Image 1 (cartoon, helix red, strand yellow):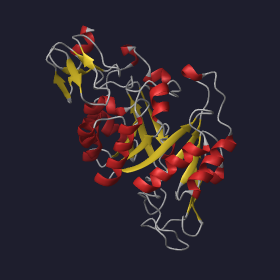
Image 2 (image 1 turned 135 degrees about the vertical axis):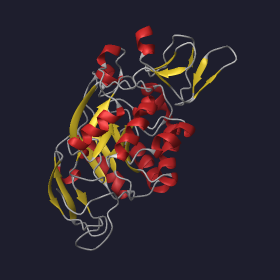
Image 3 (image 1 turned 180 degrees about the vertical axis):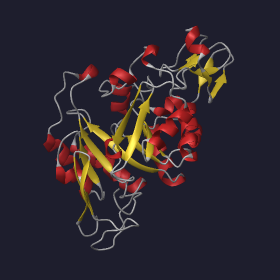
Image 4 (image 1 turned 45 degrees about the vertical axis):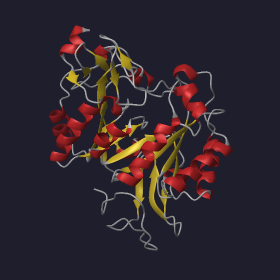
Length: 348
């Protein structure tokens, strides 16, 4: 424990309670910690004097990924991103696909040498357009992510957050100020699902999404992992996509991804592809312009089409782009309609 605190960084967003405990105000859990206790996320702790982040400058691993893998399909498509994360998570999803990292309570999973400046320089040297904070939720290592983002921006490298959006309004203002793009995991559209399978709440996530849309310039896309019998009913999909169109706009890309048995839901069946297709059809019927499927190979639903004329704009197969028909400013070459997103004139 003492070794962890020796390497810790003072954290932000906390207060001292009248009984001496420290309350973390970073996420809606508002963990109240005695001396020596960790929060639910594992990497924020009460060291006896203040709230500290025990994973600063340490990572569980790095990988160069196509940006499409985050998934982000409308943010500099065809470019590479340097992905990294720490350990722990502030949600307890029983279906977590990265459970070996996000559920880890082993501090020795982290290695040294991941200082913000090092990450930014490495991304630049490897010709990565962006750095992605991923694998576990970057909200819980906000100070580390923000410092890294500052270093990235100083070198012209963009930043991406892959997050569940479970963050307090105050902390979200700082966090997203330093992000250029985000993929937000909208896990379901019922409080029952969030409470039972993630011990969390839906309402704060919806508030984060509205904040991103109406008060920031962050480009963001949504992902929903469809779990058979849990969040895949036509009624729930319809309610969710109607809300997205009404509150966020029809141009927000939505990714329906397939679930595979893992972690504490290994008894569940994998998501049938027909379920993904049905969800995509419902979303498009409700007015969404860009709806994709993931964790399966399906050229039609991996590609981007013009919402106005139906022309294929970006043809993809398993993250590989085979054709690109957008103008320099992101318009359809056939009809001239704008395609929502942040693009570049041509693939390198």
